[in-house]
Image (tube, rainbow, N blue to C red; front, side, top):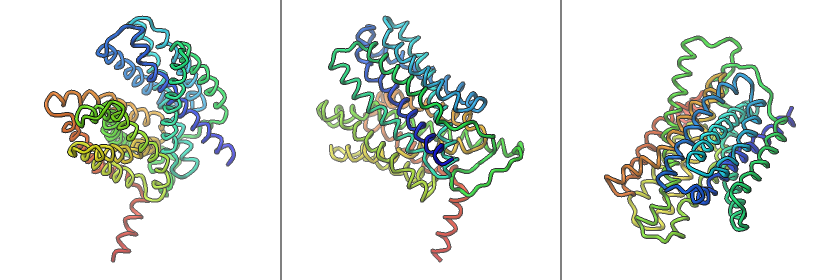
Length: 406
C-alpha cells in the first residue's frame, strides 16, 4: 500500500507539471500566434476571455464527473484531451478559429485542473498530512519548463503549430503512462476537517443541517479564493509595468519584478506543507495573507527600486500557501471533493481573470501603484476570514498556548 501511495503521489506531481507545461506552452507562443492571426492587443484580450470561459465551464463539468466516475478515469482523460487541444491555437488562421480553439483548450485545461486537484485531495487524505502545496509548486515548475522549451523552439525557427503539437503529443503520452498509478475511487465519507486534524469520518450520511453548513463553508472558501487569485492575476500582469511606468526601470529590469514574485511563490509552495503540518492551514492562510498585505503595501507606497523588489517577493511568498490551503479545505469539507474543488477553483479563476482588468480600470482614477491598495485590502480581508479553516487541531493548539501563558 505504501508503494502504491507513493506512486500515486508521483503521478499527481506529473499531472500538475503537465497542466502547467501545457498552459505555459500556449502562453509562450502568444506573440507568434497574435502576429500570424493578425489581431490587435485589444482583440487578443477579448479572445483570452474565451479561454477563461472555457476553463470555468470545464471546471464545473469535471468536478461532479470526478466524484461520479473517479479520478483514475477523469484525470487521464482530461490530460489526453488537453494535450490534444493544445495544437488548436497553433493551427488558427483567423480570429474566429482562434476563438474556437481557445474555448476548447480552456475547457480541457479546466477539466484537468479540477480533476487533478480532486485527486490530490485523495492523496493528501491517504497520507494523513499536508502535501497539497507541493503539488501546486510543481505546476509552477511546468510553466518554467514550457518557457525554456518555447524559447528553444523559437530560436530554432520552429513553427508554433509544430512546437505546440510536439508538446501536446508528449503530454498525451505522460497522461496515459501515469494513469495506472492514480488512486482508485474510494467510498465517499464525510470528513469535514483536514489531514492531521484528529477528525473521525462517520460512515452515516451527514444530516441535512450539516450538509448545508458544509456547503456554506465551501462558498466562503470560494470567495476567499476569488480574492487571493485576483491578487495573483494582478501581479502576473502589472508587476513589470509597475517598475517600468512608475519607477522608471528599463524593460529588462522591470521583467525581474514578475520573476521575483514567481520565484518567491514557487519557493513558498515548496516549503508550505512543512509549516502547515506544524502550525495548521488556518495559520498559513492568515499569516500568508498578512505577509502579502505588507508586501503589496510596500510596492504601493515606497518610491525605491529595492523596496519594490522586496515588496513583490513578500507578496509572492505570502500568497504562495493560500490557494493550496483553500483547495485542500474544499476537498476535505465533505465527500464531494470534485464538486467542492470545482466551486472554489471556478470562483478563484474568475478572480484570476478579473484581477488585471480591475487594476486597469482603477488606473483611470488613480496612479498604478495606488491602485494596488485594493490588493492590500483584499489580503487583509483574507487574513481576517482565515478562521473558516479553523479545525480541531487549531483549537487544541490555541488551548495549549493559553495554558502555557498562565
